[in-house]
Length: 255
Image (cartoon, rainbow, N blue to C red; front, top):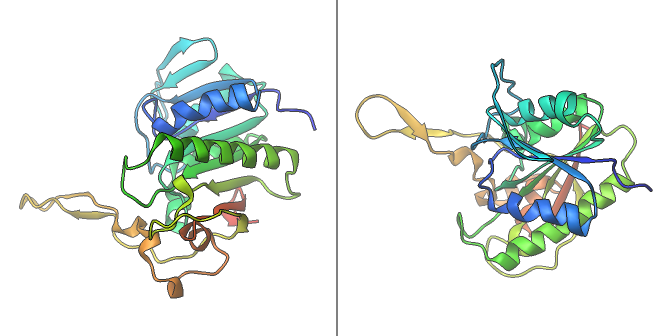
């Protein structure tokens, strides 16, 4: 099967994402795909498919790359309609952290950008790199291995897109270890979205002013007991160090 005409690469973590910086050259040099980069000019996590109404400023860095003062979905809409209309494949991510379980999937800016690409008539995939050892506690080898695995998954999905699927949500664990830190030999599993319960995303500021600050206990899905997880779901698979690939419909319904 022919390669994509051009791939639109976006994310919700902005230009400083360590995963995106490793991902772009892999897509261009290892997969050999022509790519246009259009990302938010700063972090835009957890905004789902929010669309900015403008005015939206765009800072062109060089040919083939632009930073947008807007949400991930805004980046995709502007890119596909004004900057790189020839893109026929949208890859959003890799997100810094997981997008597994119903709460994350419905709230993720990474997934929202892929959804925007899908409803624009393109094949679209959201990619996330879950980690278990704490933020920034990963090695270059961890990232390189995840990038290579994600590249293989993207190539396979492009060539073998299932009938009736609007977009895919993929989680590629960093380091291929389980929460206990033991190495595992990963499998790529077709999964469902775990309907795991959704708890508080905020905590009191502690300043006595009645305000709340970001404290997403509700996203700590890998701390759940196995008995609370749906076997064959994205959370269940990733908790075991496997790659999850979930087929979705653009109406936030599982395919």
